[in-house]
Image: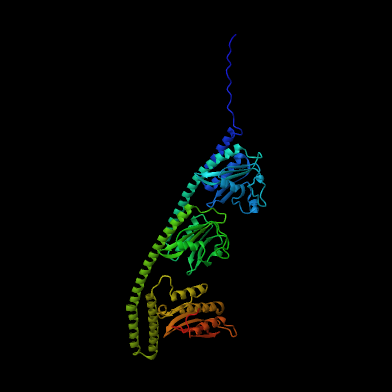
Length: 555
C-alpha cells in the first residue's frame, strides 16, 4: 500500500456580512479627498454633504451645525431646490430624530423615519423622506455638527453605509478644523488690512469727517450688507449719521432710543458686542430685518463719539470669535487714532487763534490808525477848499469811517476765536445765506456790524437765524429780485436784522403768515418788525429786538 499525503486546502477567512468592498473603500477615499482639498469653510461644509450622499446613494442630505445652546445654528441642505425650501419655511431647529442625533452623540440609522417613535413628522410642502442615517461630525473632542442622509437609493441604509459615513465624518472633522483655522487667519488678515487702511485714512481728514471715513472704509473691506455709524443725540438717543448698504437712504438720519439696543450696550460697556439677528422693527419702526450684527464703540479718551455697526442679511454667515476679537482690536486702534485726530485739530485751532490774534493786532495798531489819520487830514483839507470839493472830501471821509467800522467788526470776529462743538453766529448766518441762495445768479451781500458773537446768546442767535431763513426763503419764492442784502448790526442795546431786495414787492391782499410769525418772534422779545414794500423799490424788512430778552428765548 502506498501511503498518500493529501495537502490540506487553504480555507479563506470569514468575510463580515455587509463589509465595505474595495470599490466602496475607493469611493470613500475619493469622497474624503474632495472634502479635504478645499479650505473655504462654506465650500467644505457643502462638500461634506455632497460626498456623503454620493458615497451611500442618498437622495437628500444636510449638515446641521450645533449652536452653543445645543440646537441647530445652521442647516446646509442638498437635494431640495431653493423654491421648495422657501415653501417649507424655516429650517429644522433640532427636534425629533435630528435632535436625537444631537443628544445621543452617536450614529442613528432607521429604515423608516415615520415609524421611529422619536419622529415629529414633516412640515407642509416638505418632500417625503423614509430611510435615514445620521452621524455626528467631531472636531477633536467637540461635536461640531451632524451629517444627515435620507432616502437611500437601495431602499435602506446598511451597516456598511453607516461605517463608511462614520469614516467620512472623521475626515470631515479634520477638514472643518483646517477650514476654521484658515477662516480665522483670513478674518484676521482682512481686519488687520481694514485697521491699517482706516488708520492711514484718518490721518488725512479733519475731525468732522472722521466717522464717515471709518464707515466708508469698513464697508469697502469687510464682508457685510450694512455698515452704519450711530452717534449720540442727547443722553437717551442715537442717530444714524452715516449708512452704507441695504436701506441706506431710509435709515440715514434716523434717530432711536439707546435703551435696550445692542448699540446702547456697546456704548455703555465700551466693548465690541454681537447678536445673531435683529428682527425687523425691533429697534425702531422701519428698521429692516438684520442677521448677524457686530457693534463697535468708538471713543476718544472718555468721550463717546458713536458706535460702528456691521451687519449681514438674516441668512448671512455668523460673525466668528475671531471677528469679535478683531473688532475689539479695531475699536482700540480707532480710539487711539481719534485721539491723534483730536490733538491735531487742537493744534490747528491753537495756531489759527494765534494767527487771528496777530492779524487783529496789526489791523488795530496799523491799519485803523492810518485810516483814522487819513480821515483827520482830509477833514483839515476840506476846510480850505470850496464847497463842492469839500462835499466830495466829506463823502470820502464817510467811506473811511465805514471801512474803520468794518475792520473793527472783523477784529471782534477774529478775537472771538472758535470753540469746539459750537458755531459762531456769523458762520451760521453765512451757512443759511449759502444754502438758500445757492442757485441765485447774484450773490447776497452780507454785512455785520459790532461784536455780535460776543453779546448775542440765550437763544437769540437761534431766533435770528430762523428769521433770516424765513425772510430769504420768501425772497426766493416770491420777490423775483436781482439784488439782495443782509445787514446784522448792534445798535445801543438792540440787535437789528435787515433783509432788503429789489424785487416786485408784496402784493396787496396776500396772506403774510411767514411775516406774522417773524413779527410774533419780535413781540415775544419786546421788539418790533417793520416791513416796507413797493413794486418799484422792492421790499425791506427790519427785525429789531433787545439783546436781553424780556420773556426768555422761544421754546
